[in-house]
Image (cartoon, rainbow, N blue to C red; front, top):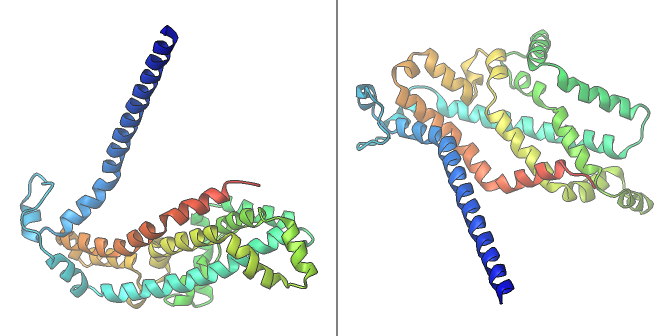
Amino acid sequence: MENQLDFELIEKRTKTRAKIKTTVTYILLGIWALIVLFPFYWMILTSVKSYSVYNSEYVPTFFTLSPTLKNYIDAFTTVSLSRYFLNTIVFTVITTALMLIVTVLAAFAFSRLDFKGKNLVFAVFLSLMMIPNELVVITNFVTITNLDWRNTFTGLVMPSVTSIFYIYLLKENFEQIPDSLYKAAKVDGTSDLKYLLKVMIPICKPTVITILILKVIECWNSYVWPRLITDDSNYFLVSNGIQSIRENGFGRENIPAMMAAVVVISIPLIIIFLIFHKKIMEGVSRGGTKG
């Protein structure tokens, strides 16, 4: 009888500790979520404040009783934000498509094909990741300028059509596919390209989708290279459009309108992440496992 009471007491204490641990965990996660989401809330709040209300606040308020959408209208009418959107879409689609083709073919070559010096070439590829981005930008700028590709979509796209990290990530996933499948496919007379398209890509679909989404986000947020290689507003991207607003005096004078433009630019990325966040997590976790 005493043993049963002791067991029930221990079980009760264990459940209590588990509940306390769970409660503390959720409280800490809630606090962290508030810290992370607060800048987004402040951005949206500022975007719906009128210019006069924003400038009359000596102490910033955490809400507004008179929200307005005028700032969003100003963001599209004062500058060519719609053109910047179109340029960004074209740049993102072309760059992502070319990058995906290069990445898939390179990852397949390094993971399945046997050629002389493969390991050495791949080691050299990985070593390039150690080079600072600033040096790469300078080299690319000189090359694009010499080719007379400044202020063109070709000059915007070409330096971004490959990524050593994405090649490495996909190669690791391809290598997890058993060699027996490849050998069986070759016995059946399947070509390498058909095996890649019908077997490897479907099996590694989560990683391919992850690379696709991350590249879209990277292109959408691209700033340094487009800013460096273009000085013609006809080729500005959305990130450069925000800077263009500031340089024209519009951003410095009217912060709410500038925040409205930032909200509009951020919405596509937020939607993409909310839809595919599980695929992103799955693809990244697959890339970090072997066997």
